[in-house]
Length: 75
Image 1: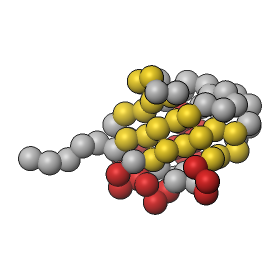
Image 2: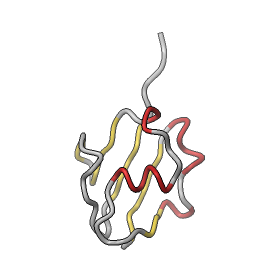
Image 3: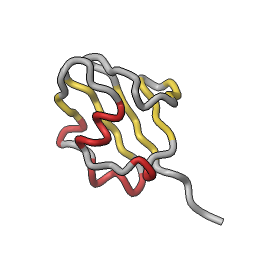
């Protein structure tokens, strides 16, 4: 299956070519993070198809769009 991946901020360099990642059926958000070597502490917010998602174990399906946002900094 193909999942569209958009990484934001400091994670952007880890974005897969063409913003697409080929995964096995039943892959989760956590699987995507591992595959792209994104440390868990580097992630603040996920959206799947534009909706906020808190469960890293959520199983993705073909054509899903996953956005990953790192923690916001500032002060």
